[in-house]
Length: 267
Length: 301
Image (tube, rainbow over all chains, first blue to last red; front, side, top):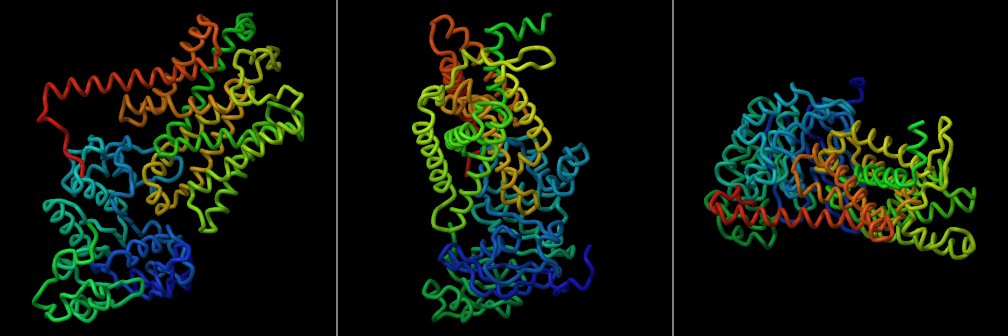
């Protein structure tokens, strides 16, 4: 571990400064400054194409920003890999891949196992325990292609749990999952937070965000607002993020009227 | 001596070459097919024509270690050019690969046409190889004359096997979920390019025997067939090797029987096996459907 003097904003679970990300000529994120305190259940919210997934990808180093930097508990991602778990969208992998549920969960341990070393019985046992946590132990030997959407998501969450990370990033974990899985996922995330972990979730559903999360960042290529849910969830902020798509907010009170489900959200 | 007699037997050497090509090609083939870019093999096997002719122009060697190194370098060159093109942000990765590989292939064919017209480098031989003649060029190994192709393919098979066995878990992760592999620090791109380089090296080792065009069949078809037969990754690899071996042996017997090109018949047999397995699966599924319709697996999202 490097000397403490290398740390920059170590008191924050996630510190993002001046972050700009571009896809070719398109600017996906512009000059983002975001400071997420530890131990919170955080929602990243914004309309389609507002850069929510891009933000997570930049945080874990899958995308190289053109400007700015990211620190996780004070360290760059290259030094913080074992403290971060990242759950991307379900559609990003081929579910026809020949692997069992248990094999996929075990992948979360690969970093701890290390290069060239084989997976052992103790690793598989740990994977079984993680599967039990998400209520999927009966599916351990199933082919991943045979799972429903919600079950697939729970497998991915088990794979993240097993990493025992301090910061867990999830991209749309509740998109297109059944109600049972949604409840399980939510209680798992709350459980993580209650154990002092930091959980950051890209969320698409404005109608549920206020009840489920305690901290929010509103994004639309730029950062619109960040902070405690009750401070950020205001008509003015939502309108700033969603613009014309949020006409419902122009003349109603956000405290009373939850916006219609999935306004500007993804399918 | 029995060993010497074995390496002296023409049918044995042709068969062994076929089996070695099949086994060596199936190893990277499984992961290329699973990644969904099996057709990269098509590109690779074409681009190494450029490497082969360049090495020939420089050293007048058509096989041996220089050619293997040349193939590795061609693989690296191809990857470097592809990455440079992708980095411009003007073309997508797959388009960049298509541009680079076809350019190198065209350059290779042009060079052959200009500089190598009168030598044994003939376009047909280059594209299809001639497995029937592999016994003619031998090199002594511990006092026994071993065909150069057999030796090179043997070395490459060991190389591929070592790579797949040693990096089994890393390859599995990088193939299934490159994003997680990267997030966990497993350098999926490096693994992928190593796989592609090994595929190039295998293509060159198989060059004399089957040529780059038939080589594609050996990389893609046995793994694709094995994938139809099982959903266990650990079984797919040995199964693909077994299928390739079966195709080589039956291809040789049939080619001998009908007096047709051996390499071509071996490649044809990989296809015949694929169709057979595909039909058997379709038949099985139909029978199952008739028996129990409501017992379907969980619906896909």
